[in-house]
Length: 123
Image (cartoon, rainbow, N blue to C red; front, side, top):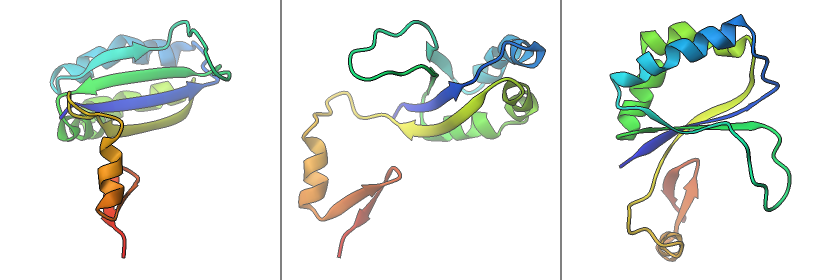
């Protein structure tokens, strides 16, 4: 199942570290099947205000995403991004193509609760 690396970044400064990071990140993705889905850009706000930047990188599966983030090639450039941006980064699995919003109700009916992406049984 497709997995995503999500970056919610703020206070971005286009310093030499961030620019170097941008020049090098694509090469780190290639071996893991990663590709940018969203990379900042103008937002068309509909509800609330979101002044930060959102980055979404798709991977074939969660293992590929984990392997990319932990790879020596990505870890080598990560400090460059941190020189000019603050924020949160996390990995999350997508849903099946036939997923419906009500599918999560089935988990509730079965007594399971979603917590940090993992389904736990409820006693």
